[in-house]
Length: 351
Ligand SMILES: [Zn+2]
Ligand SMILES: [Zn+2]
Image (tube, rainbow, N blue to C red; front, side, top):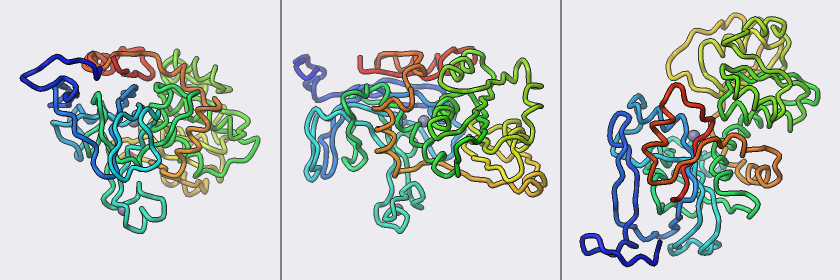
């Protein structure tokens, strides 16, 4: 790539990069822009793998308050370092990395105590700031984590999603032999199944709506799977039996079922975002003395996530079902938006 000597309007092509920008409701456009040299404390990363996330689609639909076009999205990111700015010690050109997209102010009490996700001014690359839908992406070096050779770029793109899930697991009090139910058969639900089994939960039930995803969940460790589209009566015998419920779907139905399935004193991890106020039976929460736990990001768990990827404690590969080259980002997003799409996780790779 760097050896091309073509000219475009008098500018050497190696000074330019392609970026995909979200430009309006469900619309993206590719542009050539100048590559900016990394500033103090920054590095330039050649993007090798970008995960397409439900959040990207949500932003593109124009329903999120905090983002507005034009903006390159993309927050599930892995690549290799191509240029290093001043005061970015400890990194070398060619280092393989994944990117923590969260940026805090760095000086408030939350940031200083390792909780930058709770910083009042925290923002995220690809949501509030320009994201990684770029061939070359300049980011703060302090947001990078080094990848072992055994972790592919595509797998590493999932570290961001996994780190949110692991943050949730950390908030639960898990004991060997417990029973847990995971509501939602999307990528986060499938990661939660694996994390719960790794944490010693005896019986994990995965509840979803797509047979292929539930089948995959079974192969990744789920003991029981319930397809709400076909046999929602299967949940009845599980009422009041679960120690843990993880709501990775964030719908009124998933939350209602979670409360019903939990036993007295059970723990409910709220992870999926409903996006609007929903009705919940708070009386049942009180009477069953449930513990409600909300969870978002978890900056301190990244090193453990990478260790779990390297050791295959969590198996990411089977979730990466669809692959597109960078130049076809628009087609990847079109496919992701199709209600009938068969993708679990779409990965966009360097051409
Ligand atoms: Zn995401
Ligand atoms: Zn802060």
